[in-house]
Structure formats: structure tokens, C-alpha cells
Image (tube, rainbow, N blue to C red; front, side, top):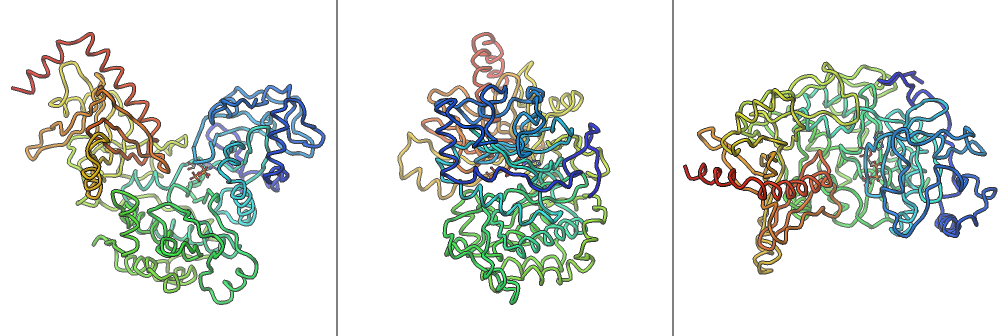
Length: 588
Ligand SMILES: Nc1ncnc2c1ncn2[C@@H]1O[C@H](COP(=O)(O)OP(=O)(O)OP(=O)(O)O)[C@@H](O)[C@H]1O
């Protein structure tokens, strides 16, 4: 296997050929419960019988308390984890003290993922930490097992994240993965708007080859989406998150291989997946099949080609309606060959959908060779193709950093992809990080008409926003307005005075405030939304706003809004004059 050096000069986990070493005993509810009980009864566990339980005197022992939260279950952050006196635990099963944990690089519904360096080898990994109590409570033990088994089945293919070790301590389960340093495919789609067709062919081919292999191993992923596709040091794709996977039985598998028709999962009738990528058959009768993964693949191809998934709407119900009615449009700038492929994949009936083999043979992929050499050719430079004019925002005057060539520019050195700033042609789903001081100055000038005297922009980004009457209004009014609730892209400005503004340019090119969010309203509630890490809600008794930011988690925003509330409070107490000036200004 390839030898690689990371940016710090450390060798990466990909360097090692080690077979999966795991503590398989913890993957049963009984064993998990037994160990949890043992740990609760402090000291009653028998380390000989449970070789992977940490020594209670170890600095890395994580104590169970009834008030334990997800965060304090985590190993200590960067540098805090002291190397163990013993390099590894008995039977070569790893333990927390074998690693120094770094920053949190991702969070899932049931896990937190941290970067980590193995103390002995200095190899870097991504370690997924799952809270045992939470897994048991939510009845997810079965899925933890499936994830491990699926990862084992597909481990020989380069298109998947590699699982190296599993282990546990009293409170958590640990999956040690190869570290995909270049973040999620989704980041690049947002950053570039959309990919040119050469890039879509290349990345589409890597994914197709991976999906094909995965299906031959009897694994249906069931949650394929750009967030679950990571990019490694060489900008090649690694599919992650097998927590929703289904493993087919051998009989099903051989049937599938003989006739190449989609095999379905008749046993699992629960909805899994993500609304925008879920197939019509899963919505209709909850039957997931290999064709359901092909459907999701079609949605991802569409998203790479156009910048957004084919089925988007203000809420999940409307997304489902669009999927069931096959209501999507291919923009005219997509080539005929690509459109033809999309139309043959996004087909309602799974048996009429192209199979992975048929997709490989489609003219869109005629330049790609589906063999080992596919994974050896250098990735094409990631380039956007122009912009979708109907989606562009009118935010003039910013230095564009989004367009161009990602591979050409310095690649992001960490997992967080530095984002672009609003430009007149930036697609709506893009979000933006803080600009440099010079760009700040420029922005403050551009938006000065919405700012107060001495007030500066603290954060500017584009969010999808919808609003409706608050919980204090009549239920019928709320119900009907929910039917027409539409998320619209809006430029959001947080100012140094703590004001949160939704702004737009008028036809004369002048920035105007569309709305000022009532960060100090009595009865204001700011909260996240179940099943969506990137959506949050601001609610007053009379009005509620729902925000979606595909890049930044809702928790960051909730913290920001809370901070804005305290800033405006301080501001009001100390600087009444500025408010008077602002009123005078708005009148003039
Ligand atoms: N090997 C890795 N290298 C780098 N980042 C990773 C790796 N594995 C996971 N991540 C990051 O952590 C996030 C959460 O991981 P993952 O999707 O596996 O968790 P999960 O609990 O299964 O999530 P979900 O709620 O989507 O099921 C990912 O979206 C990704 O950004």
C-alpha cells in the first residue's frame, strides 16, 4: 500500500497493512449491559475476563455518572491523553491511552469523531466514539454490529474508509478509522457551485466502482449522500457511515449476481436514509435494495453536475412528494449524455432503473476504465462550470475566492474547508467564513447603508430562511402557513453590536434590511431541530424562523445568537445614543 506523509510529517493510518483488531465481545447487548453494570459497581469488573476494560486507576478511565453527557464522555482533547506505560493492552487490543486525541472532526447522531495519533507509531487516525448508554437506550447495538461487519466486508476496496481497530472502555465504543483529511464531497460542491463534467465523470466513476464492489459483497449502504463521501490526501473518495447499512444473505447475493437485478431488503421495513436521497420505493413500501443505492448515486451525480440535489423543498414532506412524483428538472447547461444518464437512473420503478453495470456501460462513462487503474489515475483538477444564473445572489463587490481550481490552490490543511465569500454569482447554498481584515473593510463599505455608526460586520453568510407565525398564533393559521412555507436564501449579517440582519440588495444596488431578527424579544427560544444538524429555529410567541446552513452546525449558530442577545443587552445599557442615531438615520 502507498506510503504517505501528512502535513505534519506524521505517517498516516493508510501506511499500515494491519488487519482489523477488534474487541468483538462488546458487540452484544448482554455484554454491553454486563460491562456497564460492572463499571457502575466500581471495581467489580474483572479485568482478566474483560481484557479491554481500562485499569480503574488509569488516567484515561472515564467515570460513569448519572449526569454524564456526550461531551464529557469524550477522551481528553489534544495532548491531554498521556501515553500508557504499556504500549498496548493484552491481546494487542487497543485502548484509549494508546492514542493522543486531537480535535473533534465530525459529529453524527450517535457518535463523535476525533482526530487521534497513535502514541507508538505516530500514525494518525479518525476515531469514532459511541456512547454505550446512548446506543443501548436507542436500541442501536444491532446497527453498531452491522457497521462493523459491513466495514469488514468492504475493507479490501480503496473506495471506503478503512477500519483498523475497535475497542472499548467502560462508557464508550471506539472505531479507529483511516483519516480522510480533505473533508466531505459536499464541501467541494458548495465551494465550487458545481463540477465540470470531467470531474463528475471521475468522481462518479470512483463512486460507481465502490458501490458496485459493495453490492457484490452483499452490502447495501442505504444512506449514500455527499456528506458520507470523504476525500483522502490524494483527493480520492472514501465512503463512510455504514450505520444504516443492510447486509444481504448469501442466497440473496448470488441471486443478485446471476441476474443483476436489484435485491431487496424484505426484512427491514423501517425508513432509513436522508430525505433528499431516499428512493421512491423506500418511501412507498420501505423496501431498500441495491437499486436504492443506485438512486442515491443518481442524486449525487445530479448534485455534482448542477450544484444541488434533484429533489429539494422547504420540508421533508414536500421533498418526499417531489420524489414520488419524479418532479425534478435538469438545467439546460447539463450535456445531453449526462442528462440521459440521470433520466435513466432517476426512474421510479427500481427494476427499470439502470444497474451499476449498465451505468458503467453508459456513454457518460465511456472515457473511464473500471478496473484497478481507475484508482491510480491522478484526480482531475476540481473545476466548476460557470454558474447557475437563476440561483445567483445579487451581492456585489466581494473578492471571489470560490471560483477556480481547488487542487491548484493550497489544499485545506485541516478538515475544515475554508469557504468563499459572497460574490455576485455565488450559488445560494454556499456559506462563507470570516474574511481577511482587508476584505472586512471592503464589506463594511459595501454594506454601510445597513450598519449603524461605528458598527461593523462580525459575520456575513448566506442562509436558507423560512418564517411562519409563532406558537402564540392560532393553530389553523400556523397549519396553513406551514403548507406554503418556503426556504429562501438570504444574506445574514451579524454585527459587532449584536444585531442579526437579513439583508438584500434592491434593484438600485443598495443594501437594505429585509428584517432584523428579534434577538432580544421576550420569550425568544432558539433551538435545534430533530434529525437535522444544520437547521435551527428562532421562535417568539408571534413569529418563528427556520434557518438552514449546510456548512456550520446548528449548535454554532445557537451559540452565536445567544451571544448576540447578550451583546445587544450590553449595548442597550451603555450606548443609547447610537440607537437614537440609527432611528434618525432610518428616517432620513
Ligand atoms: N475517517 C474519517 N476521517 C475524517 N472525518 C471523518 C471520518 N469518519 C467520520 N468523519 C467525520 O465525522 C462525521 C460523522 O461520522 P459518521 O457519519 O460516521 O457518524 P454517524 O454517527 O454514523 O453519523 P450519522 O448521524 O450521519 O449516522 C462525518 O460526517 C465526517 O465529517
